[in-house]
Image 1 (cartoon, helix red, strand yellow):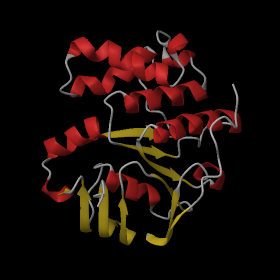
Image 2 (cartoon, rainbow, N blue to C red; image 1 turned 45 degrees about the horizontal axis):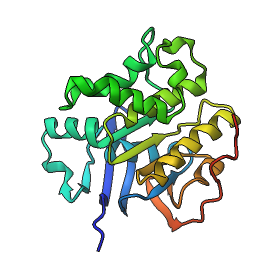
Image 3 (cartoon, rainbow, N blue to C red; image 1 turned 180 degrees about the vertical axis):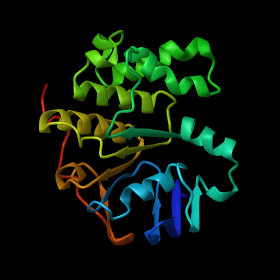
Amino acid sequence: MQKPLISVKDIEKTYNDEGGETRALRGVSFDVNPGEFIAIMGPSGSGKSTLLHMLGFLDRPTKGEYKFSGRIASNFSDDEQAHLRNEKIGFVFQAFNLLPKTSVLDNVKLPLFYSDIEESKWNDLATRAINSVDLSHRIHHETQQLSIGEKQRVSIARALVTDPDVIFADEPTGNLDSKSGGLIMDIIKRLHYKGKTIILITHETYTAGYADRMIKIRDGKVESDEKIESSRKIGEFKK
């Protein structure tokens, strides 16, 4: 029987501020198997981004148990968590988080500086990642010379450069027009076909249609969790 890559059980997250306590997550439980493409949907304030932060070792739950590759997350040291974030997990954010006045190649190489991968391999790995998102013609351009859609493709290449086990995509089409968004989702869908585990955070039903499973979050709780038949296919948007 296949073991889950990710397992969360009764996860809670409470923030304390001047206005009192805010319960962002209220007993969330589910498993993610290797190679799944999951869309986590919910309105603003539902807790979906907080959940991604828990899963990506960017924050810790207040209560509950999180396992990654069979290990309890709370048992990981800070250094081990940093290693996981850098080499086992790839992040694609709505805001891109690229270095300005820096080439595409150097932006994509950035995670390799914090990895155990030999420096002699960095250029080759980054070039392959850039080729995988069809940006080889932009490899030496600085990020401010790119379109918004191209910037998101750079962020995907950067997420791929260490060959992670899972990719978290947080509203990856949120700043894009429909054509550019479709091209980004085509790339993410291709990564799924190649065996990558994808966890997509979105509020858009159209974008969620690329996934094979949908988890709906509302008020910090799982409202529904069901397999879906992917309704969006690669190539719906052409260059």
